[in-house]
Image 1 (spheres, rainbow, N blue to C red):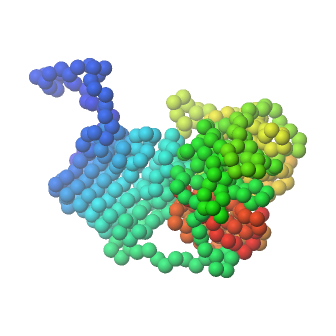
Image 2: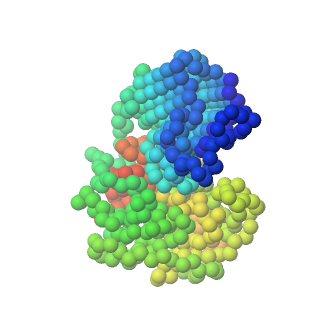
Image 3: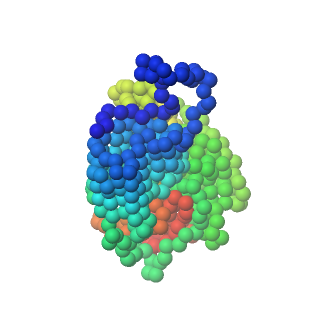
Length: 495
């Protein structure tokens, strides 16, 4: 039994009382620098080993893995294991069987763990993961496809899994089985099992909202994170690749995207402002204006300055509606309520809600504005995958990935948002067509009728993150899906 142990980053301290005959090592300042991914796994159970492990914290990026179990059929049990910041693997189980792992947490940092796979299974059998939490911190900027990668593994069960990140760059798939090609897109689920009979099902039929004979087509690819879609009055589509600090214009006919501008602050989502301008909501809580003109070249990027004071009369708000965080964050933003984090933390609150001054980012023509708030308050909203224009009295759909819900929201004359639940389905983006059909990006694209009844699912080869209608007749649904942009024709035009 191993209990209450911390595998910490770096070297052990020399303690003379424990090894009086050992030579005294040089001071830390005189030793060679610490090398990441250079040591054996922190906890290595091998060649018939087993036992009980409880209350373990492994967070040394110097190790090749936090936990490696290999070449053993001896039963083992793990309780409350936090495994973090390893460069390639947090947990790896290889040619091992008869293990029970309760309350495992994995966590990836930047750069320590940004490209890591939290759980790798190779020829694992009779393994249970119960109450597993796989997490990526707010500083993570690189997309990663799979949280669990399995090969030749059977009798492996996952009960109560949550995949989460403070950014919108959580894992595309919670579990990927290489042999069958099966992917689990859901980030929260109660049960899934790997077994010999696991196989992909037949493709689902297209919901009736799509045009007869319509096909999903990939029109551009090669991106790190195609997201934040919007369209101009002519149906031309624009999107962001935040990890590359780039805004693109899409030409579906040519099957390529043209760079519109570089935004060093990482553009998360863009909104169209007529007659030739984009506004981007940036990762560092700033906002930028990008001129597009009528040509195909690169536009001019200008950082917008926040202006204090009430919203100017006649100005339309551009608000995040494809929320990675909760609806509560948007509500507090509109009510000008904020809070402070404790020093050194971006999650632990130091205060109750406090009043914040009104401030806005105004576009050059002063007809459109984004709310500007102090960094602690605004931070959760800059991860939005979609922006929408709101004038007082207008209603728009709002979706939250964290809340796992979709609402109809109406902006009141007092600047507050009144919401009514539309569907018990969350996601990162939501759009509606003129026939009342609603499309939600949530692992796949889920289609609902105007009353919130499910109509079917559009399966996408990559995890969809952002939606918009474009094309001259606005009947083409554009889907930003991680590395690519897809299109599919609908019966009705987008609103």
